[in-house]
Length: 334
Image 1 (cartoon, rainbow, N blue to C red):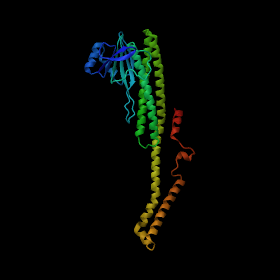
Image 2 (cartoon, one colour; image 1 turned 135 degrees about the vertical axis):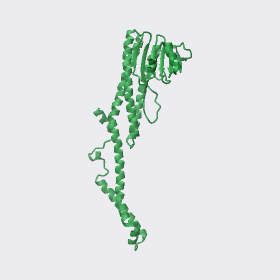
Image 3 (tube, rainbow, N blue to C red; image 1 turned 45 degrees about the vertical axis):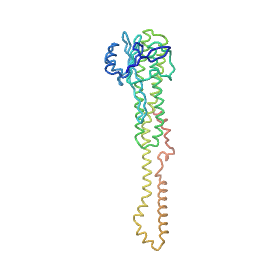
Image 4 (cartoon, rainbow, N blue to C red; image 1 turned 90 degrees about the vertical axis):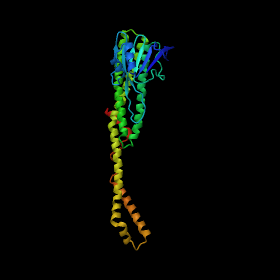
């Protein structure tokens, strides 16, 4: 699918004519790829690189145009996997045209982001798209942080691997984000040098400088999140194992309490007990039997508690290991 845009009054306006300066090729089919290669004198490798999600971000300068492979975050669709992925976008900047090649339909200019300057030439549109992408990364990092906090609360009482897998997915997503943001940073540095050589307007160079700063801040934030997640991963796994151990300990306590009761009831049996208490009213005999069973069970439970059966090992040392303390421990180790 092809979308065309025109520049008017400092903004991007959809248009139907192919003579407009901005062309967006969304997952082009074979016919559109052939038209793209023929019309703009590109090769098939360039088009394939723009659509390859594993392509490394780079900048290539040619006599009549500039090719920029940029890494962008894909739209997060929610679900239980909590996996954030990255994709590639191809930007071909000619003197009076900008060709954008993407896998899916995206919002070129983020309306929530304050525009750096009015959109008058294709270069302004390309820089605005790069700004929008960096803010998209920052927005996803906030979402990852919020999801991680929610999953941590569930891990504190969980005995399944589901929430641990979700944390692994978040940690893996951050690794991909850091790699993509670092690649974009190298592209921005080279774009800054190219802008000086080509004597681009000072406003455009200032925007590129701002992009470099925001990209570095975004990368630093992603690295901090990744370090915290990695440092806490073992602690979260131990927390799930500890929850399972507590459950097994409680079940064992129940079994131990009922073991002597079952033994007494099994040895005596109801027929033998009736024979032994035939001279006593059955209401009184069975009531006394029930009271004796309850008393033995309570005494067994008290005895097990006194021998430290249910006590947490951390409490026996005088301190309780709280889940909220795990973050500070992980930060010290990192």
